[in-house]
Amino acid sequence: MRSHSALGRLLRTLNAAHLSSLLLVSAVGLAGAGCRVSQEDLHRWEGTERGPDKITSVLKHDKYEMPLRIEAATSLIRMKPRKGKYVGIEQLVETLDNISAQERETILVGLVPTICEELRKDPPPAQAGQPPPPDPSFSFKDAAYALFNYEAEQLIVDSQQRDDLKAALKYWAMRDFDRRLENKQQKTSMEQLLSFLGPDGVDQLPEKITKDARNFEKLADLIDKIASPATKEVASAKLVDYTKWVLSKEWVDAKEPVVKEGNAVRNLTVSPEDFKTQLETYQDEELQRALSALKKVGGKPAVEYALSVGSDRAIKEDRRVWALAALELRIDPKNTADVDKLFAVAMDTDAKTTDRVKDMAFARIGEMKREDVIGKLYDSFTKATDWKVRRAAGGIILRMSEMKHLAEFMGKLPEKEAKGYAAGEAITYADYFIDFKEGDIRKELQKYMAAETPAAQRATAFAFYLVRGTPDDLKALEAYKADKGALPTCESGEGCKWECYVPKDEKKPDEERELKEIKTFGDYVTYCVEPVIKNRAEQAKKEAEQKKGSDEGSKSPGGEKK
Image (cartoon, rainbow, N blue to C red; front, top):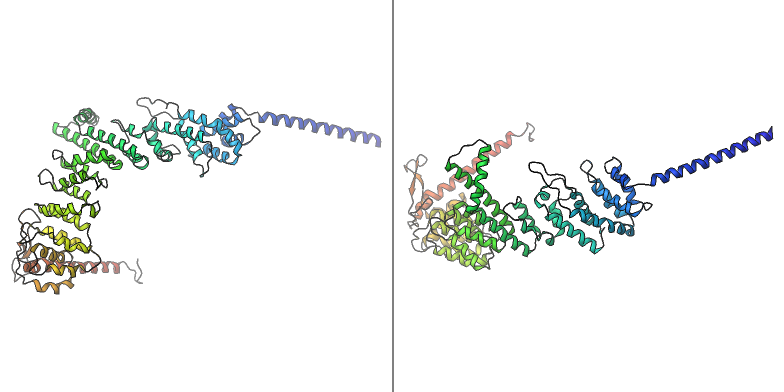
């Protein structure tokens, strides 16, 4: 029995060992079958929930053949975003960063040509009246950008690969530019891509400035931020050509059917006059759009053209103003021809050159350094026959000036009886004085208030107290109330005359008032300056009391803010 039991135990042991061997062989066979991953598996996994991890596993492990690993990298690029996250591209660059440099280089040798090929494919054609079809090249563009910019790591170290990939990215960006610029679903925007490529990447952008371009402002912005000076000059000339077209009869002829079609769609019936207004408004909008682009890009062609529009008396006021506005910070003070043109507009006495046009020209002059234009400004200031033009020039001068320049400015004011020196002019100059630092403006102005001082200088000094005086100044002004010195005279236009409101009945000074011309400095202090100072103080007091009452009303019974 014992021997029989021993035999049984031996047989059971042998059977168990045999069974284990069979199981082991089966397990190895299954494992071998599981490792035989095909390209079809990779493509199928691109759309499954665990697909990204499975494909990444193939890319990562050296047990797989290199062609399959390269195909796995391509699958990660092709994979659609998951809940807005570009999981495939993120896992691609992370994996390439973590494997050995030798493996990464081998994979990139096969992957980079594939990316370049995809980037150079023609975009899918759009069907009329249909939304644009999906463009699979976007994911390859995003992957290429990620390879260059993964956490500041140089995943692509081979110079030829880098050059090939950048050339393909530039080619991609310039093909179907508008649609690719406007696409909101891409991981990397066109702005990011072109900024990365740098000046060489945008040297073809001027070619996109055509009559049919949809993204003028964005084109101009990209060129302004990225392009080389040479490319900017080319773009400037192209933008000028486009702007000229907008102002041409050819543009009007091309857009008339568009406006008519728009009216038909909205069932609008308009008169010929209203239709003309519609078309002109449309043209104005396009012109402002074009000038905005010119302003961004700048360049010699843009400056010269905008100056020509701003100088043209035959062009309507708004368009001249917009053209001069487009020159903001674009005038080179060393270009005497451009500066002279700007001054010619600012000093133009023709009725067709309105104050708005002149003011915009002076605004451009005011952007330059004082030392570059002060001579021309004073020349314009002293030669001006229109007080409004002189005031505009004087305002620019004072914005550029400091306390040390006060005597220089006052010395340029009209002398003798100062005919044509306006009250509004003196007030404007005086208001600038408060910004003068490094000294006491009241003390400095005392030098110009004496009876023997030229009338324009005196009037400007007294005007300071009209616009900036306080009750503390009243005592000093009291001595001038009997001054019989003659004020300047001015007869043309609103703001010209020296006048203010005085009581109709001197015995009832607080009742009805009337506008009266003022002829002497004494009357100016008595009827204009002193009442304004007192009224300003009363208003300030009322406002302070109202604020105090408002603050107290907002507090809780405990004294805290509600």
